[in-house]
Image (cartoon, helix red, strand yellow):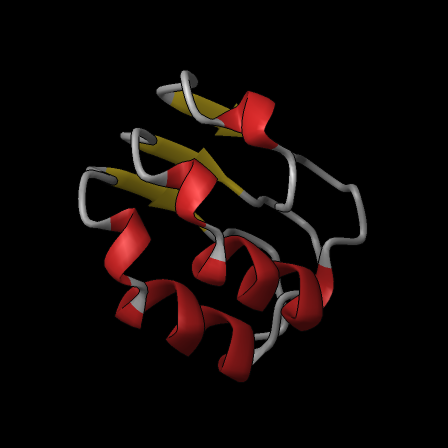
Length: 73
């Protein structure tokens, strides 16, 4: 989430990577994800807090598809 090389990406797929709620919050707070239109966090142990952070993120306003399938929500 702190990597400036994420900035040009429109899609980010992190399936089964143990991102968790802390990782989801870090992504939500990262200015480098502002160009994402697709974010796939399938099976990553993301809980309610992480999902709320993603939903409220001003940096993820372009996301049109968010996959949180098989998480702890």
